[in-house]
Amino acid sequence: MKTFLLLLSFVLSLNAVELGWSHNYQKGLQEAKKEHKLVYVLITSDHCGWCRKFERTTLQNKAIKERLKREFITIHLSREWDEIPAAFQTSPIPRHYFVDAKGNILYLSLGHRDVEMFDSFMDNAQEKDKLNKEKK
Image (cartoon, rainbow, N blue to C red; front, side, top):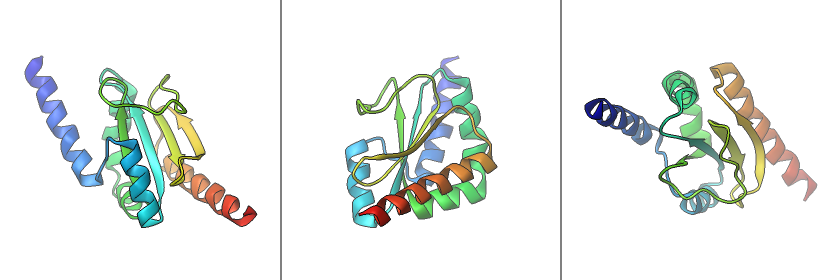
């Protein structure tokens, strides 16, 4: 069992490198401000089957990965290991937050989502950000 968990951690860390996941919310916001991008925050738990399914399916889709890398700063927070901002709920999971560089929540969802639905979430977040900027 221990070997399996180590292997799983290794595989997940490879995926984390590929998408450039940060585990530090504040640093992610700073990077988003510098790069003029929105932030995608994924909150998971080590023992969450739906989280692993989302990571194995939707987050492995080539178009989703490319869009996330191009248009968002990606932050992955684990309930067990990372400091999670008080504004974010951590149950149920997986939880998906799209925020602007100031940390304002633009869009949120929970649960496993397929590629098409997750892609629409990114659209919704960007549209909300655009509308917020037009109001100013």
